[in-house]
Length: 116
Image (cartoon, rainbow, N blue to C red; front, side, top):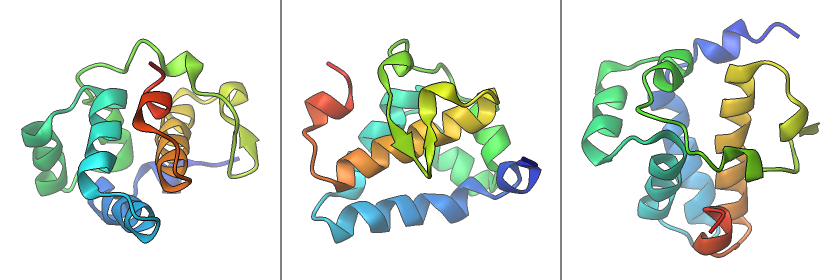
């Protein structure tokens, strides 16, 4: 599978979709941000800088301060693929974020989403 198109999508264009998905199910932008902060190590200021710079998804993950040590606990199917079996590291990170936002939208507690 050629993923280069996905990698070049600006994160700023995907971020509102994550928020929209969560808000449709009664969750908040702040909860989406919490999930992003937990996964990537960004904070409010550095996340906003990524959005303002219009960095693509590849750069967004490449510049992430630190991926959470518990990412290996994120398992299951997203977009028809088991996240733990995705070989391409960047695609796996993208799907981790997709999975976390999906869990948020499905009403899971934040404690479970953040693998506490």
